[in-house]
Image 1 (cartoon, one colour):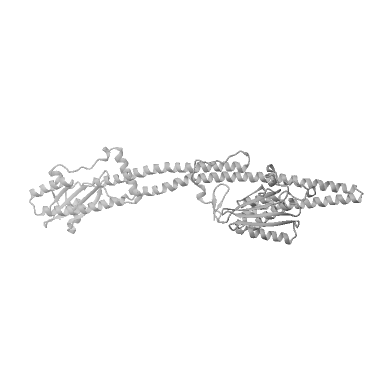
Image 2 (cartoon, rainbow, N blue to C red; image 1 turned 180 degrees about the horizontal axis):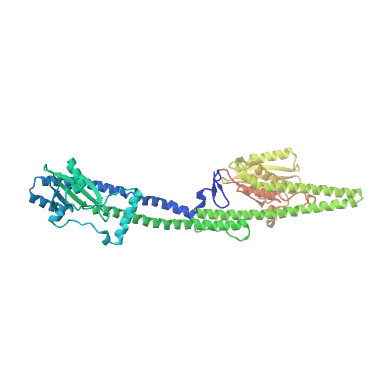
Length: 522
């Protein structure tokens, strides 16, 4: 496993910093696109094998030509032999020489007629050829090509001045050797015995076409690689720009958001991009907005908590400070009851606040399961009856539609239903019915709990879900409710992708209905 270091590099388990972490994304894109081209460009060095194949083919041809020409010369007269030397030399662009049995040169196609070729003088050629020869030497050095000796003309005209003729005479079979002209073009020399009288034929060819073919192939490949390399670099830079620049913008905005120096920093959403970068930008932007909202909610929650706890603390302090000064037993008893009531109120607030603060974290770790909402409601109603809670109110349950199966966390949904029933019981007069209805239309399961109380005005139906909001018609209920029940219930409902709102009773009777709507299980 690799660990990300603060400087953007990756650290392996052994503690060493990976070299990949030192490369920017642009460098990696360039490397990935250029590496295959570099390998393709390496094919230039393997043109040496192409040259070797051409030389092998030319060796065979030169040997066959020498043997065929020697056989043609063996049975011909001297004049005919000279004519054949001139004709073959011109047609094949070769130099043919005949040596007698004593090793003397008695016929040379270049002396009998105009030379069929001339070795190029490197000193008179342009810079292009100088560069080509320098490139040849460099590539030969890289691939370790065999060193080819330079071709030279012996001053002596005797056969003994030519090692190839000596080998031909001693072994009695045709020989071939390779050398190079002053311009680094190959020179192929072949020798073959003529007849049975000891005469020998030697042919010399300047295979300029082999060098030209290899250089042309190398030039074509080099130009193609350079063009493709240029296009690859441009495309890589374009690709890197379309990837790296938005990522840098996102990173810069994320750093500013993390530092918290400017609350107005907007993470770019890149709406014009419909690829993964755009999806990432919008996800980061939404995540940032969610974090800001969460931070704001925490700040407001902390302020609300401080305000709500401050009230009972002030009352408790006043009661305790007044207690030593009061001598009347009845008044002291009232102050003690006030202090006890405030302590219980603080304890209830702390418990509710603690529960409210754990909802999000618990929901993120909880395992979802399919829950039959009707069975859950029946179980809760039965437990409330067993505990003799709200004995003055009857609870009825009616179900309709498909089986009300939802996906969620059972303990949290149970908390929602308990809070809604507690709220309905606290507002319902004695001997009134609390109506619970469950309906499933195939897409959503709707749980409605209606009480018989005074109802909720339209303008206050959102306020009832605000934390610590509690308006009770009975003054005796002051301090008995934290005002967090409905706020907690809505938070849990939204965590289940559902909604919770307040409505009028559908039958037109006095009272309010709290409607919980959850998506059905898949």
